[in-house]
Image (cartoon, rainbow, N blue to C red; front, side, top):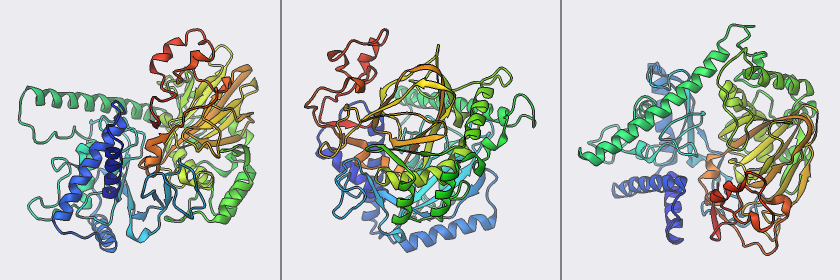
Length: 562
């Protein structure tokens, strides 16, 4: 449950001594843990007892009543509760005896839910903020995770949509401030023990998208007024950024059919998924064999069978330990997607273009041009099969969100990309074309891997050669870099997949990083991230400035995952 997770994280941190200052994600997690512990202590003082069946019956009854009365106009869709298929390890990243899927892997952080009858249960809701608030142009996807302590404990709330919001953390969870009674009120604050209800939680989610949260308990004075003003400004700035993003998508997808300013092929933007003809025949054959489909997902709560995992593994080629490739897109689909990306960046469309990340100067975030729903379906119906089969203990079976983008390498533009790890739990990278030479993908080791069985983080393990339509899959923590292109042009569709369950585990939050006993391979050095880069070779021209923010090797024997 959220209570146990918060207690585990808080106790783990306290046993390690003072937390290094700086990581905002750790500070936010501590705040949420403290809030959950406070609620938990109150539950115990009230003498409550967690009953999974009672919690589920209560939740189902509330959702049925909501539907019977008619959903509020701002609530566009509401799912039934489904049990979590995977949960965080109960004791951090230590693998339990008899665990055949992650034995000895310190990066393993999730396990198949041993008892789905006791929760947690996920409810998905799509809702809009108040008109003009900045979150009104398109629905926002919330996931509410209810534990067996419901209704005496509120659900954990995450936003799965791409959403600019001042009070969302990097892992998609709402701020601890959301759970305060001033913002998420119990059904009846006067009764003891307190209880929450689904409509009240959903209304709080709508307020989260409609106005700044209330800062409780502070009397009016100069300091509290400044804090409230800072929160108000931060909220409104993020809301305006979110509205601008949504307005770009509405303008592009809302153009009349066949208009120069709209999509060339609307099928790329179908929220139900891309058509089967976009995919490689070998991929479709395997998905059909294991019960997946390009547009159809499995029944909720289903864990992938050992036979299905073997089927997926058979169609993959292992390029290096932890690096796999498989045919994904048809050649015609690759060409079509390139045309779509080039079209969006053309003067005919004339809309803002968001670049993929701080390291890529060219390309497009496809989530921000109206393709988020289609990539949601791709993740759910295609990528999830490979992630669960290949990386189940790093969240592969519990993917919840993504950052999807197309990168571009071309003479006169970006030629390659420095060594790095991804802000991703599982990464899928499919080459679209065009004709090019060079531009290999060099892999080194996985951050935090056990050196008894795996390569050090800065030891070269393979060079992958891109093939149009073929996808390479690896952990986000796997160090890799794009070798320079020598001629031509290369575009790749990359999907960084995130798992809330994995990111709630100690295995994700902290990595043991043993001291290197041998010099790193030069090919694995990063001028962006390595503090000791200049000890092995000179900085490239114009790159020495990165040294001030470099972090690897870490100064301690543990590192906060970046």
